[in-house]
Length: 340
Image 1: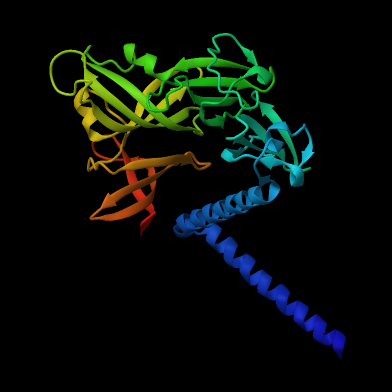
Image 2: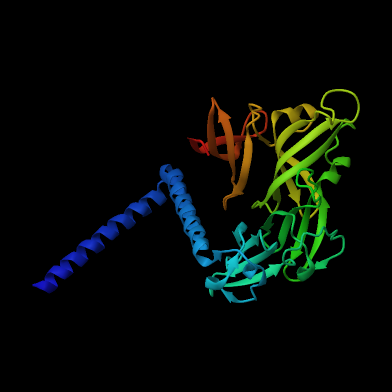
């Protein structure tokens, strides 16, 4: 009697699973449900990323003192005191969690399989400005002014750092670190490019203060932050009172070239035609907090603004559709009012 009851319950569970499976198959085969199905896949992807992110907090503990600057290769995660996580991300092979230790001033990794911590790049606690015009080995590299870093699909690390020791007078540059060669070399300095790429009609100079770098699935890098601009000659926006715009720059590592990808509407008056319009209302409170791409290449913007005396944070989906003026369509994906 008991066996019959167990068989009956098992049959019922199998029947329910078959119904669920048939429902999922019907959704996949129904073209009208494709959008909903894509959303389900994206939700699963986001859930997977959130689970992975939650593991980072369990992998290693932060602490004070000298422990975190001296951990030897292979120190177990439970014994690793890490001064602070910054720019935490998976490598392309999804085997290690790379991060910048903001106290130790080094890029390190936690191996997902064995949980061990390894220092990868940088001389601990070093804040010396190095030119990197010639390759520098990883152990001698100084990362005290690192702003952010990101991988390309080949496993190279592209670092955005500030060559100036003054954080308020930033001179951002891009460095390339090759894991195969264990060497790091300067690629370009962003502010130097105004002499060519960002100088329009010999009228305006640009100075950039950047906050982050992200790798797109088009094999290009995207840098975001702000820029100031002013005329060389007489007219509006002198350097004693320059104009300012939130910007996204697109960097091509094959040609070492940079172009405007996103900006405020004001830059269109200077002859620049960005693909993404940022801060369309020219709000003085608008902040671009971060950018990210999903695996289909869709760009998402994390922004913050003060609207009608309330702070609003939004996650905005960009593209792939175009507006009549050729700029990418934007859609508020997540929006919340708060006082953060």
